[in-house]
Length: 316
Image (cartoon, rainbow, N blue to C red):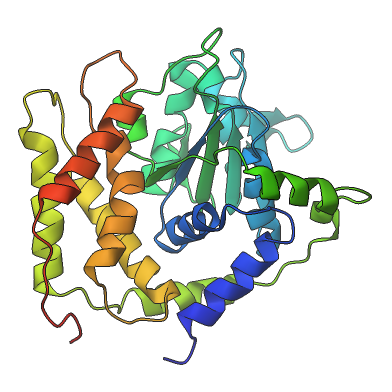
């Protein structure tokens, strides 16, 4: 392959590591979602580096970046933009909202009302924005990184199942261990690494990478393995709603990107095992109105343990 995925990944991830201490797997999964044309929900307690990780990835790429701080009084037009009457031109002029970008950070998305949250739905799924009957392309690429705090519930609006399904992955930063905490203090002792960070990837390189990823081979036995896992999420008595075909397609795209980042032009079962929980768990509904994050994760892990792993030759 002309552009080696492993070198590509190491270049981006090493740049992210200049700002983010540890969290290599989270960074790798975030990059995987970007390459798979998906979107990511970063969910964790305050202060774990969710926003900083999103900014670091955006700054590593020569792309447009916008940030929306979601609040209860935010309106859909604050996200998408609106037509404003221009007296001098005697006509309505489009004032574009922050979705007209390449990487969009939707900070604390669960603080906005469901109506405003829905303003992102069309952008995320259809890659278009409709304003007064006219459709516009928000950006190419268009990658949404949303953050939310799962602990604080006062003044928040839980994301509906329809919107959760739009997110390719649901990731958690987690708290650092002792060594990582010390490394953070050392790194930030007398400077702010994010301010010094430079981009290491162009949009042309990103487009070329996606083209190569589209050619990654997925053996029939791997596809059958994916279907077995997804079907397992739909069969349990405790399951109200299992993973949809959209979720399985997301798993396919992510598996191809994950394999490419590992320097392979074919997928193996380990790719599916690494991605099943972040890609599938948040799409499972075990009871309406209840947060089943941990329960969905445990269900996927049980299905993985019970599903026979293919052992064929996975190359072409």
